[in-house]
Length: 183
Image 1 (cartoon, one colour):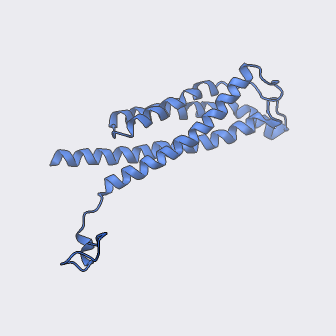
Image 2 (cartoon, rainbow, N blue to C red):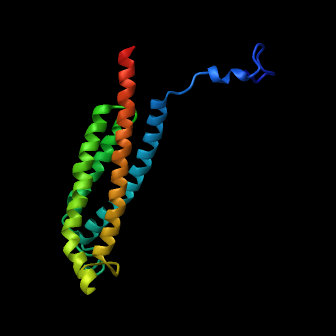
Image 3 (cartoon, rainbow, N blue to C red):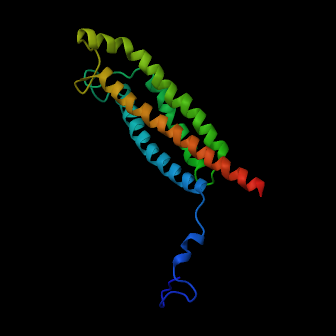
């Protein structure tokens, strides 16, 4: 091996790299999944900020209701969607399987379920906008239904990827604990 002081150590020509230790696959998967979940959590936080801003602005009457529409019913339970991300963040440092499972289940309840309910709640309004070109709620001049459906499409993808990477992380952690028990 090379040293700072000079040439390679005696007795090796550098061809022994295949015998050196490697990071096992579940540690690599754990690190990459944690990284992806953190990135998705940041995107989720920005989506949450947009929804929370609309709810706060409309309820505090900071601007006219003609400029920012009243929130739909699904937006209130969606505000709880930050809770699963927080629990997931608590699970990361010490690879806590139980916190990760709670995070995955609560992501389904507080993140995905309100979005599905919102899609059903806004469908008649979207249908009316598509068929007749009439919208009654607006966000900065755009149809509120269109804006919220766009936000929902992005949010569903973010939450689906969060749950997917959480499952991969759970599998990696579970395999790691099973290998430790075998030894």
